[in-house]
Image (tube, rainbow, N blue to C red; front, side, top):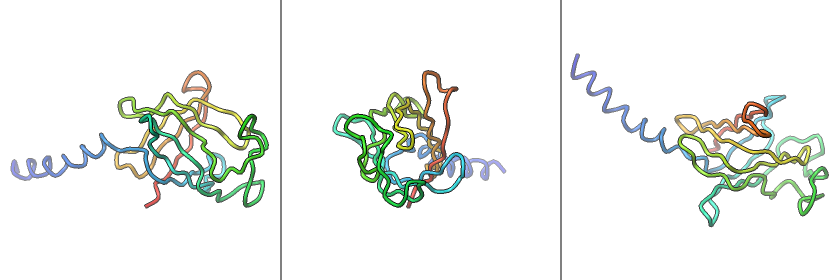
Length: 146
């Protein structure tokens, strides 16, 4: 019995190591928090200053048609295509989460603070956008594309 327990513990070590290093970098399918349907494909990447950013690769579902523009945005994003748009920036690792950055909701043009929490196996991630406190916001589940 003792040998089985030791073997089990040793086999779990690689999983524990992976869980500690699950990174948001990669391609994700965003899931709408209201409809629970796939909404877009987003690529998260490391920037030259070491922070993470994300851009929309493809819009899968939109009330504004197949190639929506950010008509609710202001500044340089105003009326620009959502596909190709950087919607998240300046996110940095903080323990088991990534935060400190901002995320843009192209539907309403508003920018929120963001917190990313990948699942232990890295296949899903909770993306929380909020104003002020993390409790005052909304979350989406993003699913990693393989």
